[in-house]
Image (tube, rainbow, N blue to C red):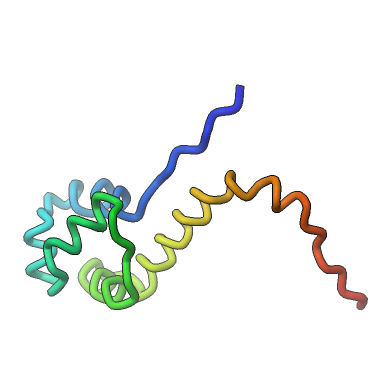
Length: 99
């Protein structure tokens, strides 16, 4: 039986892997990073993407690379969309480069 992949969002990861374990509220994160609380709420609820600026701010706050959250978001998006383009992906013949 094939099960559909579980969609994951950067917001879910931010909430479950960072905020909840550290006991941080969206309000406290907003105050510490200068990211509007309404923007954080939209990201956490899957209604907004992480911008480059937000990735830099979150990276600084959580002592990670400035592009960490941007790369994590891209990984989520690729994972979530891979199944929907699987048929098209199979039809594409990879370019062979002569050596």
